[in-house]
Image (cartoon, rainbow, N blue to C red):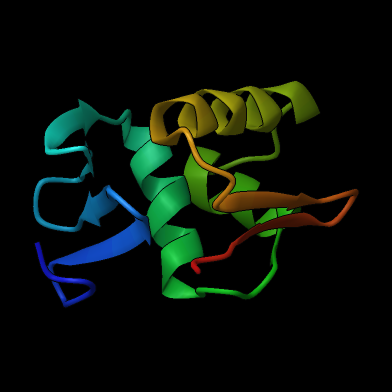
Length: 100
């Protein structure tokens, strides 16, 4: 599998995100994401290594201001699926994706 191209991006050693299929490929296996997880992940990937505020994420993913736990729980579930520390929380500010 190629490192990074327009169709997929390498998140970790054996973990890729497919922009075509809208899923994670982990050790060669596809992991399905929810619509909101896709929106969240693609927003962070568009601004790779830049902090995205909670407010922007809430409005982009949920189209409204939501309870703080809603965003936090979605990120928790996404981190479990990805199983890597790629998504970092910047306390009280937002989230960032860091790719090594």
